[in-house]
Image (cartoon, rainbow, N blue to C red; front, side, top):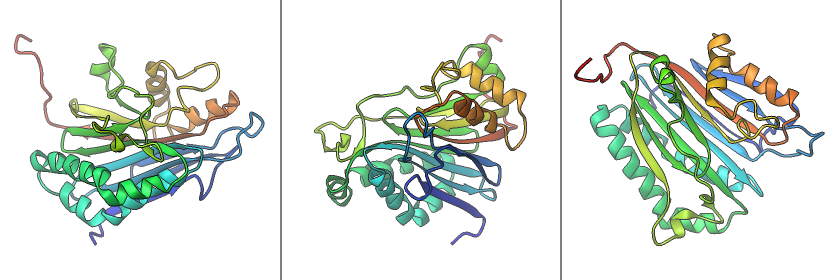
Length: 269
């Protein structure tokens, strides 16, 4: 196994962080977890996440999951990726022109495979799933459900662009499974990063569904990140959730990437 790869995975059934704020660092990637407020009625956490990072090959892969009923569906998805870690990390070490296309093919093959479909029929509940990979100056994402990917950069913010994917309701993996349909429903895409500092930010929906909606407008998230530079810049977001007695759990995976290559510009500029 490549020793340059840093790895982390977690699911809420292992440790729920109810009433607790937690920020965990994997090199420059930050994982933030808040399990929700027990006084508001929360008693379990069905989120999950996975982070792989290779500083030598200059890529990152992150997955966040937001399950309901039980965490079994999130556990199942994480297990599938952990079992394929060698193949996926080897793929991401290939040139980006090749790796993203092959990665999406691998994900689709996994989710459409009979072994996975059979396992999904035997779990209780289902999960939203957001998979994001960064290599070179490009970002790739694959989403089932309503987890959110933001890309924060000054040039994009000036044009009012923050959110990369659109939340899709009634899409899941698990007991109710979009890949059981005759035509599976999911979204995927690629995004060019801008020159300079890019803030890549994945979150479950607990952040935007917090009481009083402090972060429904993504510009407010960007403001917090900009006002709180450094390793713990996602902590103020979690603190606001706790102050608002948010019941729903929230899981965040975020990191900064500095891009030295020029990005696309209009020809008449």
